[in-house]
Each structure stands twice: as C-alpha cells, then as structure tokens.
Image (cartoon, rainbow, N blue to C red; front, side):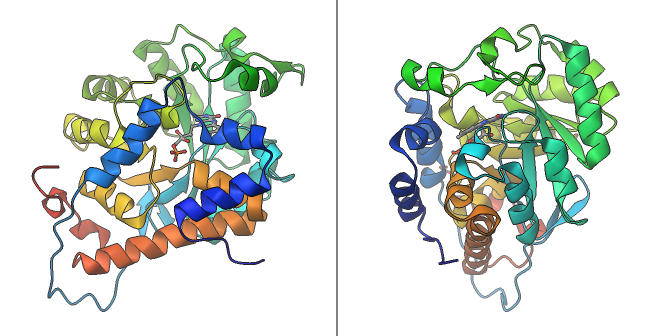
Length: 344
Ligand SMILES: Cc1cc2nc3c(=O)[nH]c(=O)nc-3n(C[C@H](O)[C@H](O)[C@H](O)COP(=O)(O)O)c2cc1C
C-alpha cells in the first residue's frame, strides 16, 4: 500500500477525507468543550527535554516488555470500539498490525469484532491485552473474560471511567451504539455498565481473571494505590482521550502524580494525546512503562488495515529512536526524570 503520512496532522487529515464525516467526528471528538482533549495534547507539548550530548548513540535499542512479554518498543494500541466501522476485519487487523510492529495491542471485549477470533488470528509472538467494561451482569462478563483469556490474552484491562456515558454530541451517540453481547442488538451502554464498582470489586475481579489485571482510567495517585492494594498488577493512566469527564486533568499531569504514588509496586502505562516519539520519551521520563495510542491507530486501521496500523506504530517507534539518539539515550533503562527540564 502507499505509505501513510508520517505527520500526525496529515494522517488525521487523510482519515478525515477518507471516512464519512459522522464517523470521523465520532472518533476524533471528545466530551463537551473538548477541554481535556486539548489539555492532553498541550501537556505533552509543554514538556521540555534536556538532551545529553557526546554519549555514543551509534546504536539505539528501543526494546522493552509489557508485564514480561517482549516488545520492540514501549508502544501499544489503545482499546477502541467501532473498529469494524474503520475496517471490515476490525480488531483482527489491529492485532496483526500491532504484532508486525512489535507493539502491544489492547483489544476491547465488546465493540471491535470478536476478541477471541482476533486472538486466534494473531501470530504467536503477539502481545495482547483484553479490555473489559464490567457489565451489571458480572458473572456473564467474567465468563466472557475467561473465554478470551483462554484464547491468548496475557492481561485484562478493566476500564473504570465510564460510570456514566461521556457528554458527547447526542445525535452522534444515538447512532453509534454498542452491541449487547447477549442479544447482538445495539443498546445504550449506560443501561448495561456496572456503576457500583469499588476497589473490593477490583480485588474480586483480579482473583477471577487468571492473568494480571490492570485498571484503566485512573487519574489520581490515591486511586492508583487503592487499585494496587486491591491486587491490580498496574494501572493505565487515562482520561479516555477526553471522551468522558471534560475538565479532567491531562494524562501527562496525572502520570507525574501517579508514578511516585505507585512507587514501583505495579505497572504504569499512559494514554491520551501521544502523537510523537518525543511524547513517548517524555512519558517514560515521567516513569511510565509504556504508552497506548488511540485515534492515530484508528486512522491507520481505516486507511490501511493491519498494514496501516503497523505503519502508524512504526513511525512512532522511529521517532522515539531518533528522539533517544538526540537526547543521548541508548536504552530505555537510561531514561529517567533527569531528562526533563525541572519546570515541566
Ligand atoms: C473511537 C474510540 C473508541 C474508544 N473505545 C474505548 C473502549 O471501548 N474502551 C476503552 O477503555 N477506551 C476506549 N477509548 C479510549 C481509548 O482507549 C484511549 O483511552 C484514548 O483514545 C487515548 O487517547 P488518544 O486517542 O488521544 O490517543 C476509545 C477511544 C476512541 C477514540
């Protein structure tokens, strides 16, 4: 296929031209005034790197791992519904593209095509995590989780920032409804999601998963500690790409609070507005284990299927490698807070 634009704005423009305006608006958009969407981007942009020079950066190594599974770089695809609207293969193309790029794929249990089929189509070295919304019928949710885990997912990501649907444009939300996994018919997710979750439930779910559990949608140090205390293996620092609570703080700012609070007791990944390799490097300097990328991966999927996803992730890793070289960093274990200017 023809190469996709490597500039994120040009990629966005290509997706806007290729997708219908309604689907584009649904994916690109966020809640209410989109203040948090803008804050995510602004917070990464505001971070300033303190490059080291004269460090022999002839060889750069971006390899790392996700809960022990080898990756070519600290990068993954964020869980997103609607993937079948982007491409007929949906999540199956996403897992193939991510695996080709040596990246993590976080696949939603609902809304992106069959998660078990996607896992079955993945190569052996694919690193797959399963994203789950807890439904009011917890037993049914957990039974589905266990089926997916048996199909090859190495971790479960429980998303907890959906106690109510985000206040996104109603006319779009009406048309873009989730599928009830029981009936196969579209339903309003707010009717189904369990709104009563507490850290005790995190503990119960963690016991039942059979693989490590991460909690996604955490924006405070105390909440991250509560998740780890309850038995979670880690957290994904996220404001859902600005799609839930508008006015929530930027994920980069939350990351800076959460990493010291977790104090190495669990994995900390982050998503929201990561568009450039230097953003990945800044996230790692703040202590993240890796980043997830949402909308750009959706654009890659829409424009080029598995290959498009691989290209978007490959571009990000190339940029990370360049940023590392220009910062005098050869390996990711050399990245720490010292790489960021104190004022940031
Ligand atoms: C179209 C779309 C669908 C999404 N669906 C889900 C989902 O099903 N589960 C979930 O945990 N997060 C979902 N998210 C949020 C992403 O996982 C992620 O937090 C966010 O997109 C990251 O921000 P970014 O798009 O700026 O990279 C969705 C985001 C988008 C754009």
